[in-house]
Length: 611
Picture: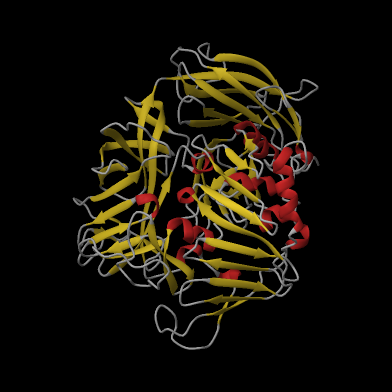
């Protein structure tokens, strides 16, 4: 499975398949402890993440694992790393008790620029937008900010499972002094910085934002309640209402401060309860229990108590998938029809209004899906899940032998094409205009070419002998592979849940030989005088020092403007650093390397950057 992760260039969380599973006993649970794993939305572990609760702080290791001992009884655990949105999760921790808490982090949106002396707007990924009136921002001391500011817009799609898990909190609000659960119809994090300081909106001022609609939204309502996220309390707070945009592609609202924003509808909550035990009937404390809406877009979670008991909030009269995950990897899933009894949020263990699902027997290292099928975590990467043409596809990817080891050289042409060549002979050649990337294995043998199809929804993989596979995700966020003979392979939500449960708290053992220090690459830019440093000297870049949020100080990954919307469009593949004409719903200024950007479609930019 190592070569699957290394060789494929894809934009989905299915690459969590590359994570190994272990059935070892793992770290000993003791004291008042929060432990788990931090992964990116792509499924890769994230090291160097600061984990904070109260006065306690630790960092995740290179496998994304962390263990935080704390004196706090609970609160909002904060996960911080430059280039990512902060992870914000509420927990309660009993004395002499350990809680499992795995977290998904989303990359922060690309850096855009607006001159607040004039005012202007910034257009981010998926059509996310913020309009900033002139002189409307203040620094942490309350002083008005002048000049250019850095704007980061990060949309969160609740229809995409990885992004839903990365959303802050657990979709709880308060109404009439009582908690209620929310169903999301789109989220957007708005962060504005200057000189490493986080800015806010001046008193009496508002900014206008547009939150993109979730994937596959049909017949959106004209008006929706608008909520902001309270990072101290870990809940969503009703702030007003948002209106459907004239284009019908998002919700527009006025916001008096900067935070994550969410358009939601409260739903009538009920609960599901049960008791999680091991095969010998002993309680499993600290097991995470997740509720994922099937007939609605909502997510909730809780942990079992010292007796293995849980009660989790869900929507009334709905279909929901409940997943109990073993703290050391493994678990069990059930599909449940919820009841109509109104219960508190969060519900209390023993609430008679809960649908009681009895005992949930879970074992470390195995996962049982909704249909009763058992998956052995250590075999996740084998024939048991990757059957049929999918298994053949993975084998062909593995045969490539593209290890991407040793020193590398990145060559970029004036047209925006790039070649990344490694010391072992592996290389990637990207044609930005055609939207293709060709991969070559060690020794320079051609392996396959990847091309974007269907407006970025699917990728075609064409191998040396001409056989073609098409890969992507449908509107239900299920993974699909279409094989040369027309056979279709789908990875169900059950299989995705198995991967999540099995990798819970486990180290990544799939690529031990690939570890070590990052490799420095020499970047060779064309001598055009536009967007680069203007000389012929190669630029040395060390990936260990890169900050994803700082790749293009002149506005990348979206568009920004302090004037009227431009009427002309920059031709794709041309340089665009500082170019306000690289705009449009599907065209952005893409940061190839620091200070050197090309005007690409969003899909082509993602392909070039391997996101």
